[in-house]
Image 1 (cartoon, one colour):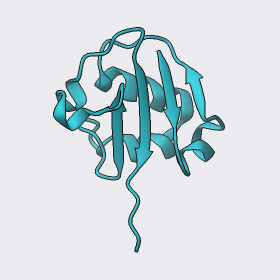
Image 2 (cartoon, one colour):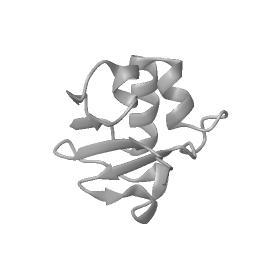
Image 3 (cartoon, helix red, strand yellow):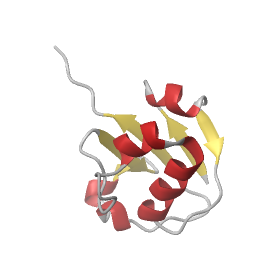
Length: 91
């Protein structure tokens, strides 16, 4: 499974793209990424109790927002590309 990180999330992971071990859904993927890359990433990916996605993150699976697929319980395939963006504001 390919995972891509964007903007300042790259500072937390020290990479732009990684072949990550397959996880069956977004929940397990975000938990595994948090274990691999630490608390700074976890604080963005998940709510404090770890039950949902954080409010400052956008996750796409094969270019589709997980909000429209099943949220944190979106099923994944080994061939999927997961893109993780921070929410960006400005004007």
